[in-house]
Length: 269
Image (cartoon, rainbow, N blue to C red; front, side, top):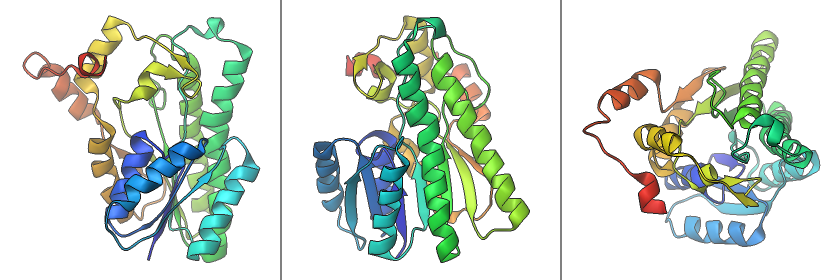
């Protein structure tokens, strides 16, 4: 039976991917920073009748000790880790770069960038022991070099995650290691992440033009998870990018936005 570890998986895309893996018979290892959220997510996942087991553990992805403990738990309990997904992340306040405080800058970089580095390194060390495995890092706005006002810090972190993933893929290729690393490009997800900063500590309000774009291009995380997970399971190619919101899909939605009305934010406000 195969095992998947997903960071930042008590809600949003991470939780929705955990549900899909669960339905497909995987052992699922989730993590978060709040025990009550972990317990609630485990309860919902266990309501899904499937063969695999579900476990959860507190983990601050910016701490290599926490991440290595998460890897040790999965490895020792299930005998291996088939897939590791670095999904944990936080948003920035809706402010220009020079308006951000030093603490928020440090916090976001520690979670969004260092968290992906820690997870990748911890997973690969375990996978080298077992002789197989795949790691995926979740991209975000900035990964494709796009710019958006008031997202400079978040975009910088995600662009770095993309470079890091590609660089590790190159190292795996050069050394001919029996591993895979890839990138997951989910596009715009309609979750509380869009209106929260510093991991729920602060709320932020998007302007009207940003909301219009998100209404056209956004999707709920369950839709995206249903697309991503089967392709993650099937993939054997190192350095791959699995993209939900492709350029072709984005152009199609922009062209049909006049007749394809969606109002995510009115529903959520």
